Length: 183
Ligand SMILES: [Mg+2]
Ligand SMILES: [Zn+2]
Image (cartoon, rainbow, N blue to C red; front, side, top):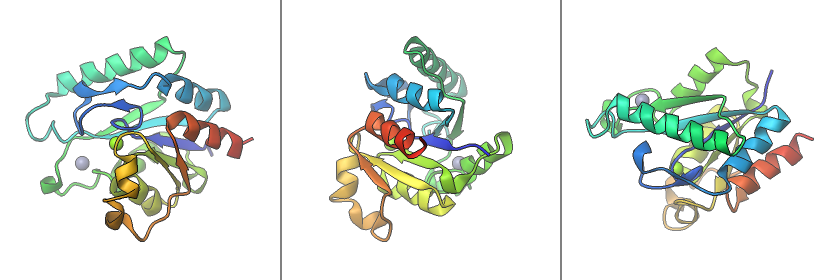
């Protein structure tokens, strides 16, 4: 079985507004972080809520174009995401895949042989990413980029019963922690 790092997009891999890949601007250290995971044989799996699709504000073609740009930018830095899963829904759709629900994780487990207890969720939103980690029995690494600081501050009450496994300055520090755990 493999260890996976389930990686949030907005606020974690890059800056930009929520749930719309067109606004994602990769952090300068993102490719290096993903490359560390690639080299260690840890699956790097993107996991993103893109509710603008369900709202009709983002077409599938636009999403796919944004995803290609992301893959190209990572490739330029020598890094790759092994897979990307996307929830296109809003809260009102009441789907099973919108983080912190586990549907995208279950999709990933159909495609890869993943040991969840040894795997990680890296994200900036406690109420979404850290709750997801808790829901699947994985280790949650909260990054302080994006809304990470707010997740530990004014929004801590939304996920108050859950402790992150580790708090990292950014995704590069998160990847270093994972690599050190796995060596
Ligand atoms: Mg995020
Ligand atoms: Zn969904």
